[in-house]
Amino acid sequence: MAASSSSPSPSPSPRPIAQQPSRRIPPPCWSHQETVALIDAYRAKWYSLNRGNLRASHWQEVADSVGRTCRLVSPPKTSLQCRHKIEKLRKRYRTEKQRSLAAGPHAGPPSWPYFRKMDSMEIGGASPDTSDDDDEFDARVGNTRSLHRLLLNGAGHRSGASAAAASAGVRTKVEERRNSGGDDLKRGSPSSSGFDAVASAVRMVGDGFMRIEKMKMEIAKETERVRMDMELKRTEMIIESQQRIFDVFLEGFGGKERAKRMPLSPEN
Image (cartoon, rainbow, N blue to C red; front, side):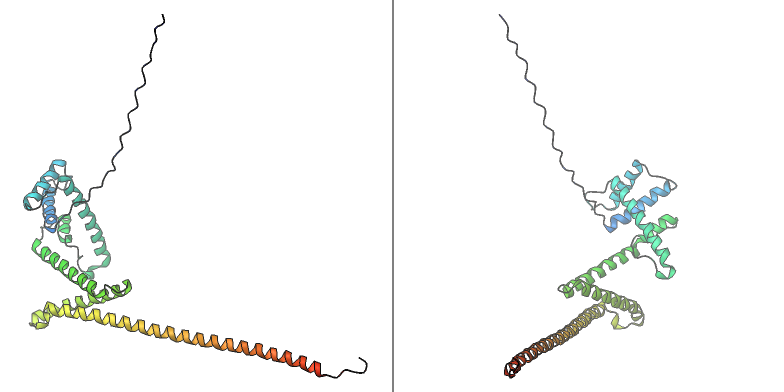
């Protein structure tokens, strides 16, 4: 009696696990206060190591110092985030430094709010007072937002070229007003008020748009005049062609009539 042998069925192969697409984590948002605290903390730790490389424990101390200075920020910045932020700041500092050297001594200091602190840290001087940087940073942000809102309200329906030209004129006028405002303050003149600067900026925007609209109207008139001249020439050419065709037709018809009226010769 033959015993039936059954072979074991092969086990099904495991299904490959679908890998989830990795989502890129956005970079953290650094406030002005956190950035200043980071520069000061890194400066102190870097100088304590005789400007040597920071290890992981040193970066953690820098992050703890930033967290103690900015207690209201949640979540606090990590050591890795502090390290990446310092690398970005030093890269931006080198770019601004090269741009300042290329512009020459008469161009003035760069407008980047952290240039003074980074320059002092790299050179090795005393740390500058941060109150002036904070005031300059707040004033720059406020002026930029006010101009941006002004341009959006006044030039929202205009073309990009018109808005760019108007914004350039506004910036130039406001800078001139700001420069002359210091002299007015010294003399005690009431024209140093911020309302005068805003009114001047609004007038500059309005004048710029009026000039642009006037140019558009002149261009439209010139285009219409050229079109009418071309239409008139086209009409004259058509009339002249029809007249020539009519003359040729009359000449041919008259020749046939004369041939019919001619008397036949005796030879024919």
